[in-house]
Image (cartoon, rainbow, N blue to C red; front, side, top):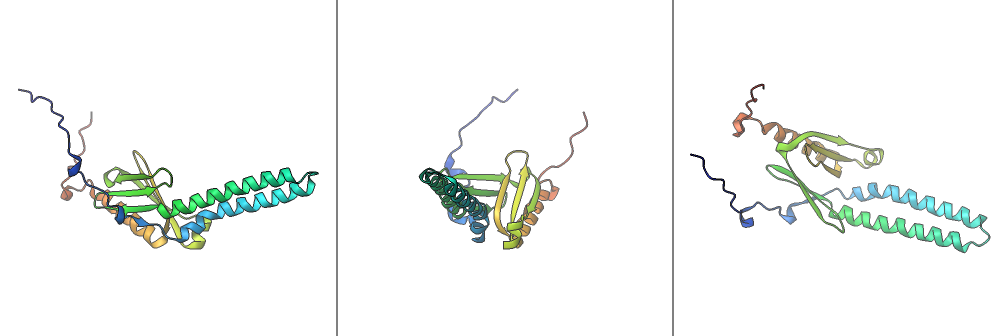
Length: 182
């Protein structure tokens, strides 16, 4: 006799929660690293505006355009500072979570069982400041955590790799017996 299908509601009180105070902020040097592009953009706007003002018969128009562009660059830099302050990660027993967003707040969680690849990247600015970016890839969404110290990125990579390897470990209570060929 077949058991009738049931799909009972789950109380949200029983679901695990992410503790807001348990998120680890990225390294404060990441603010400097992320503002490098804005600095160069501001320098280009100022130089371009100065050249256009020197060539223009009426310097008010290039001055207004340059000032407006500089204001947008400064606004973007201020938003980036707030974004860096909000950016944080949380490692739990079974997953990795990332908190981000200034205007729209985002929290992404990636179970270790879904992780396919873990990578540490270091661009020239990050290398100069001793920082690294951790990229965790999965079959679904990916998580990228910038602004980590080199040591933290390596430790988190090792932990995620270890936990990913434990997912199919028979001692871990998970059956990893391969399916028979079809």
